[in-house]
Length: 183
Length: 423
Image (cartoon, rainbow over all chains, first blue to last red):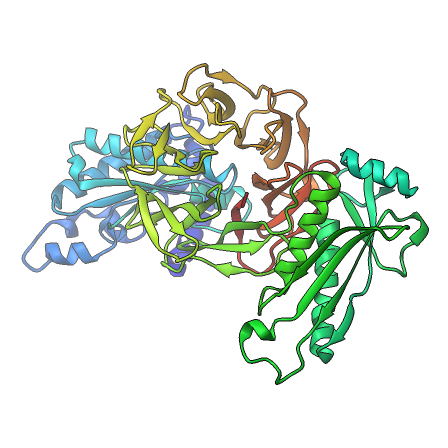
């Protein structure tokens, strides 16, 4: 968990550096949430995300049982991020979810918990409801992409299980997410 | 705050000095108000040696703190007091058992006699005898102070109340309870889960709370006597809340089993659900008025969380909060007159008080308090407990809403949140 956090923070830092020197790329900028959700795109937890090939079931590859033991992030399922007090999906979030949906449909026996999370600002109870709204938005989009709803369960942890510590925007941005876990 | 008429007459007859206004250090402003001075005399220890003397000091200090914490009195020792100016005094006798003379636990208990006397005049207004067995000494002192408050002020004291809350972080949070004075901390759950929103039943025999089991939120009941836990509701989606009905027969909660967060009444005897709201908005944080007729709750139907009131059947909804963009976590005072809630302004959450009709909003905390959340009333409608991160970590604080004076209730290096005060 800690290692993952560290790599997240490093990658986030890199993202800012790249954003700082790389100038503009083909990002959608008419969406005000785009800057906030940037971390999502730049947080591929493993190289697997860039290359969907290993997720194909080939004789030498992992079996269904292997996948069932792995964290979803280990085979390319990525978390999506939200703007403050929002549960609408950004353009980036939708693209990520489309990729997630493809992987989920390939492993139709696996069930996922979509966890909604919030940053620490705001009240405990309202944030729990907001987290669930985020999880619902993600579930609904995945179902639209053809993922059977039986593969998805929802929960909200509100602000109770933060991914990053710190009372600043970079920590808050990491904590406003829908996270995929095993039941 | 008025002295009960009978006691006032008595005081006038006795020619006792009235209360003196005094100034105390408080959170936001300094404000003069009336507290009644009360002399706490050293107890006479007739037997039992040093152990009994220790017990006597414990009783004296518990009573003195209780009187101060009531917000109604100021406890003074004989050295501090101008005895001629003080209206009341507490004195007593502690008869400890000599070591080796006790045969049973009951026999080992000291005999504690406490008296409230008018000052001067030394007329006995109250005379109580206790046999506190092991661990009951503090409770005896608390009980006597409650009797004093009841006699002089005509209202029940809060010295025997307790506060239940959630302690811990991330994956592991347990329900704890603590005496209202910060003593007697006890952990009530050990299920290695995330447990939040504990709420005492009106009779104090049960605690309703929310917990995650295998990634699913549920509402549970804990029997305080046995520690047994039972499921109240585990419908899919959110199970937020809970808060008790004044008669203890129902819970209010926000459930999202339809996909939308709506307020429900949950009948405890059979789990029957009665839906009270219908909207696409987030509707959370319901709290019953003490007479059971109305419910205050939070809805973000206008785009930001605001407080609303509706009848107990969901009818007659009307908006209550018009100031501030983010209002949540309302709680109705036990006397029905006030509502305390959390308001987020300029990126900081504060505790705010208003009249039950929504008028006269006033902040109880300011920026020096950091973020303050989850206010809950004491049964005296005078004190609230809430969580503040002013020390860098959420801990619980008790505030007297009449003057803003406050004290820290819980300590330690784990966050404490979602407190609720026993009735």
